[in-house]
Length: 196
Image 1 (cartoon, rainbow, N blue to C red):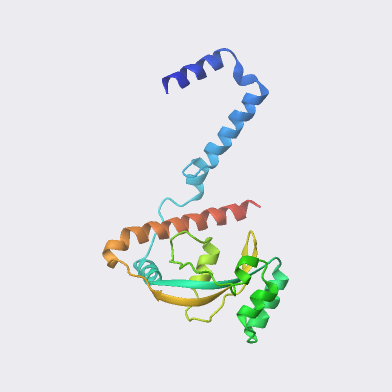
Image 2 (cartoon, one colour):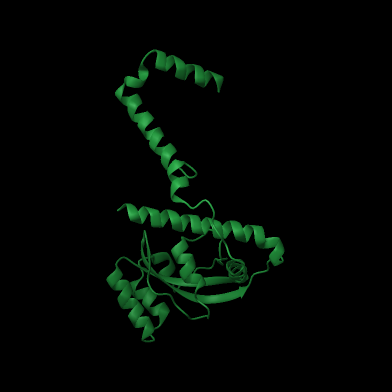
């Protein structure tokens, strides 16, 4: 730490900060500092107090009590996703549509089924996919198309089981942190949308 500080002082004494490459590095560091999580921009964009109601805590606790397994269809365009969704609503077989339309060849051979169990709030899924999956309440239900970096997904609930949790009072601190984190991310996303 001391050596780094001494080198920095010596660099300024030699006028090294005037070199183009050094200026770019300083600018990059400045941008990273301003925009980083808990940096000045973050602190000005995110509410200082994030309120979480008792009802929100109870709802999250109830969601975490059920783990889910899903199947999915992934397509490249919104128009194809909407067409597949329309076919599903008309009663078409999900596994057949997976084989015909899904761009994920590994899972299309398995009818789109994922063997992994998903538990709400574990961070294994992007927030919009997690929200869509955990809004499914009955085996066989499917989501509307969900946008992602890799295309559009339609998820089907294949199986749901109890997931043992500690008592609510024991889980409360983790639940509170999770909800605050989600609300922070939503605030960042809303702030970012307002910039463009």
